[in-house]
Amino acid sequence: MKVDHDRFFTLPIFHKQKMSYNLQLVSSAKCYNGTVRQYKHTSPTLNCAEMFFHVFIPAAAQANETFPVIYFLSGLTCNDTNFITKACAIEHASRLRVALLCPDTSPRGADVPTGAQGEWDFGLGAGFYVNATEEPYAKHYKMYDYVTKELPAIVQANTAELSINVQRQSVMVRVQQIFLFAHFFYKFFHFFSSL
Image (cartoon, rainbow, N blue to C red; front, top):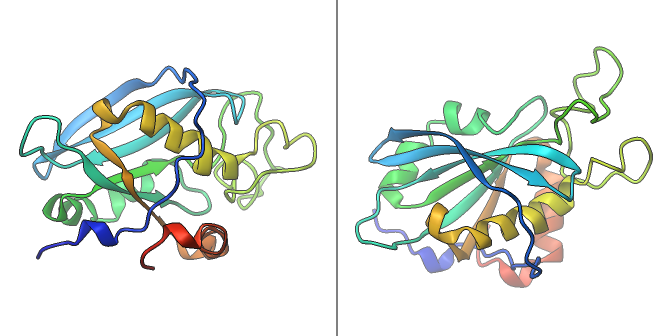
């Protein structure tokens, strides 16, 4: 099956200023002739010392080859590992020569406020990819800015390491985040070529 990579919808590169995110490789494993890697980095946007994301990178046919990327935004109670380990998408991404990038769903850390005891749909693992406006959450819960500005800037700053073509980015969401996808499409419709 041939994929027309020019039909991938594209996210603009928002964050132009140079920032240091201290990107560090946490783990790496071969999978379907490619590599699954987990990275951690500091996040000025989320005020977190450690944010994580997973990326699957297909095997390169030639030196310095880059790949279109699909950002997958997981749902409630998830983290950066869920989609990459459970969705069986890696085999297809390898065959289609597309990278997959899966960020965490919320800020993490000892000083990050959580929901009340037993609330599974609020707090850690439930960032909803929006920016909080009220304290104590506003300091850390800026997931909209993280996935639309900071994470693409990290990818852009590390294209050689990640082998990602920043001109060919798309986003895929779980059904609970469909409002976010609709917002992305509405706000950035001129960058998308398909849904």
